[in-house]
Image 1 (spheres, rainbow, N blue to C red):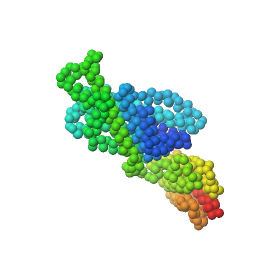
Image 2: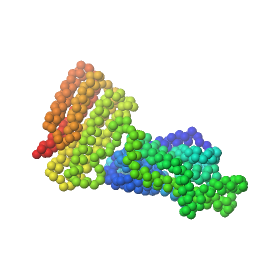
Image 3: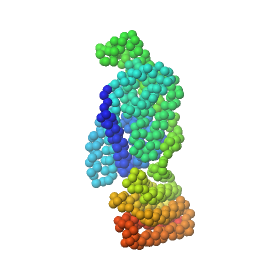
Image 4: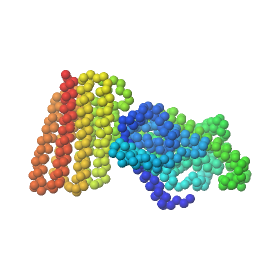
Length: 606
């Protein structure tokens, strides 16, 4: 087997295409995901059982657990699915992958999804040139999906062709008679093999070849399949590299599920293998353990027949060839039964511990920053509304969470001012700020949609006024997020113009940020207990607004003098005043929220 450096570069390119496809697919999903897609996914994953069924059906349909789990990772990355929902789907996907094993065992073929990739790109391209932004986003999603499958297909193409070169594994027969130690070795071999060739189906085929040549017996064949079950988790782990914390947790949950499942099987290994041998015989498929014994016997008693058997030169209908073919079918069915029983037991036990899995994964993959936590509504569910008046309280809490999330953006924007521009740190922080602004847009839409649904119910006059007030508050809070992102965009323009601020400008900007931060803290405090607002707290907010306006006016006057005195360049003064004006506008939006809170307090008191 020749494997050149060019082949290796091709493999790197295939992995790159796969990761890029995942990124484009996820971004397209985030833009295109309207209420309909959100509601469909919510219905499909409403509880752990429907989620599991969804995972099973998707995997059985596309015949690739790697592809289905990568899709789940992208859904979580786009904020369309929670970590708990994704765990149930992944558990179902693990059972769904056994469907592929059965198709290969019974019919000897696998559906080639990659055949649909180019037609999919052909359909997607016109969507990219439509005026409707939603259609463009759908086009991006489909192209990302196509690239993802193309990358998966090319990874298999550019890895060393191990399946056509089984002689590479002949040395493993020296490790086949070490008892339980051999089992552990072959689990590791199955794991590494599947990680390299990116296909548990190919590992299954190689296992069958090794067993047919008499190198390993049925228990060690099962060990290879067991290892491949862990090895297949490498694909979603690769996909999560370009995702957020939630995506990484989903991929880690998949790995954890398979590892824990493998652990209990290893403890009860030989009794469990014997159970599957008995099941295979009970189904009338013969003894799967007989193949390696029969082939070894042929090798010892008639080496010429053994050699002719594997170079396909035995006459058609030869007794040995017919017998081996029958026993190969028995092993193939036996391995499929082993894989199915293993995953079904895993699912039936671990489905009850979904929430425990979530907590473990959150510990294993902590978020480095609070702002890394992805969009997920905390108090509002997407299910049916129970009682409109009672749902208002949930909405009020969610608005408070929304305000707290946007409040973090003020600190992020201030940090960005002091980070050296055109550095990796600046780009990372700016991307985080943009991501948070995108999350705030989606939260506004979700909360507003929920409030509109409440308003369709039977409400008191006070309830209707509360909803009107909250809709105004949500809009103003989102505008605060826009202002914070606006500071980042001003800094980008400043960077492009190669403008520098002096210490005096930085000091004044920090003072302005301080005033805005105090006003925001007071606003968040008011929202946290909106039904018991005191007039004294309202007055504090108005005083903060006056301080912001007065300081803005002072800086504006001083800016003209500083430019005339050549304290800094004219262009520096423009960007400086842009930031100050944006922060003053932030203060206006904050006081608008306070006004809405005050009006609501008056309504409550009336």
